[in-house]
Image (cartoon, rainbow, N blue to C red; front, side, top):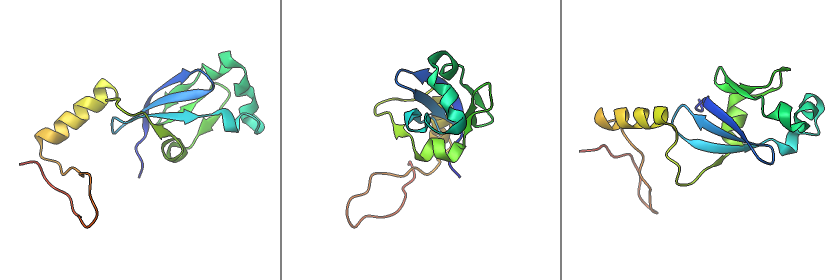
Length: 116
């Protein structure tokens, strides 16, 4: 299961800045959807800015929404961003409890290592 949306903020050019439950910060580009059915209303910038995080997804006042999995899989990671304070607390808690962490793998390497 993919992480869910914890925070959302509308950005310029119909982009949503999303903070997920795993602490990741990602950008979701809404512009490709603006010429489709119910999403046409979002072309009005003041209406687009009325987006809210609801139950792990995003929603606008007239019911427009996106599947949480679509938001995660179709969004792009923001390099060098630590995420929200909530995300940082989760990561800190995981480190303190020795939760396994994936590491960057080179060719021929495999597995997961634990902090020692």
